[in-house]
Image (tube, rainbow, N blue to C red):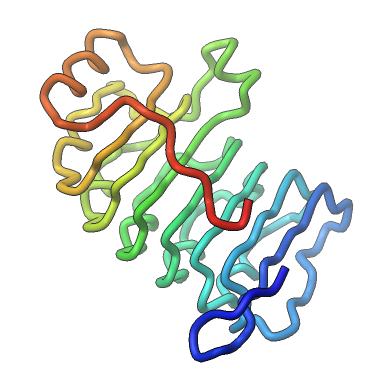
Length: 189
């Protein structure tokens, strides 16, 4: 998909679905890619995404890497959705995404149904995202299963969480003006 964008250059959408290749493909004109969906591909790593300097929207299903470090280099990113990130335990690199407005981190639906979670060290890095407006944490929890860190997200309007204690979610939504609602969808869907 190509639309016209900044400076009358086409915006390119990268759509990779269930690719059996083990290596991320080479991208012609990486500076034109504004959005990408990498859906259940077999790539050993998604580090080559860091070579897309103007990426604004990114959707990933099955994140193969052990770190979000390379995602922190995507300074133009505004929308990030990651479904199934079993090797991730530290979300701190996301704090460098200063333009991020929408974030969704989730386990597979089958994990959620079986109450299996991805444990991350802390939600504190999310408080350093000055424009974060919409958030989903579905089966992604810190060890204490507390949402207190999210109360520091000054622009947060909506949030949806699962696998947190009911008392904690009730407390969080009562203590804030955040609405319990799913994130808006990305533009390219």
